[in-house]
Image (cartoon, rainbow, N blue to C red; front, side, top):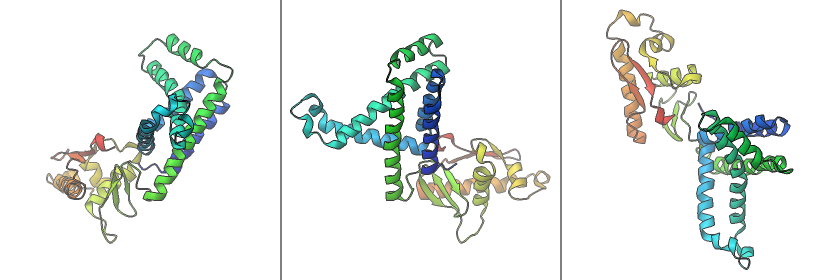
Length: 269
């Protein structure tokens, strides 16, 4: 399911606001955990973070010596200072995320994780520092999002989704036309069933029998032992189109028979 840059911003600001008004220390750590997990899992946000990381590595690689030489520091490029500043504040949140992740997955004793975090962020200025960390991370990611949307027209979205109106399938940011001239083809119906009708569970297996009834209006599917071939051929046609246009040969995983089913390969979601 597509997540736009505006949706990402709203979600990040929601986490930020929750953190700022929360009084319970442990719950604040939980919010940080959810915030960083969101950035790491949402494809578009994750892509932006990777770009910031790559830019930082390049910039600091050219300017690293200046940080340790007082005579050279003022000659360091401003973008290098800003890049380092971003990762300094991001790491404040990342440390909390890592500890809370250990706690959630029982990889370390609860008392040890919590005590470590309390010690790390027990200074009088800790709360303000963490609030500032949210602000700095948000600002940098928002800036990158806005630039990407303006320069690439939104094509930076690396998620996999289906634009039913335009009949365009986006596979991790790469698009392919499914139907032309408002013609509703079988591949279009299949994708509509997965991405629109079942948008909340697109990772599931979808049986030909349910697709036949719900999307094609074929109420007598079970009365013909060869009806499954229509849906099997539709899956094959879609995979062949993606192979031709994007070089992707295995977007759909599907099988044969009356109890046949289809699913999107997890690596593309």
